[in-house]
Length: 168
Figure 1 (tube, helix red, strand yellow):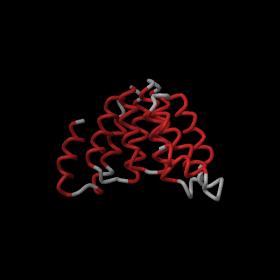
Figure 2: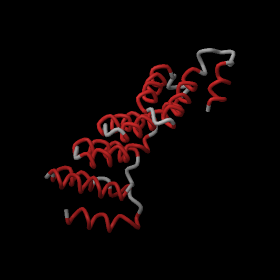
Figure 3: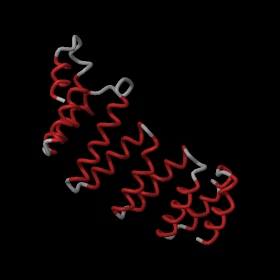
């Protein structure tokens, strides 16, 4: 990592490599178990990177922020980082939902899973989980809304999912 960080120092454009260099410094600090310094570097990446140009870098950086936040027990910050990365890559909404659920924040879990299902409406596994979350909070309307997603599910899973939703 030190060699890469040093190589970026010699890049002719001083602004373009800056967020990448900061990300590498964050990784280096993480490997040295200095999470405070790592988070400082990651925050600088988030503020200096260009979303249109550095989207993948931002995605990876936010995942590191989430992981480091989990390591120090800051579950809310970890969930916020996952929510932000999910805006860049919607595949992470389901992970944000699961973390929110583990934290006991069912409204957040429902919102994140709903975001996931807006983009992947045929995901039978997560439709079922959303209905179960709605049942936990006592929302019959939420469970009924899950029925509207049945037509998007693969035919092989539709009947089983419908039976499950009817039991809830």
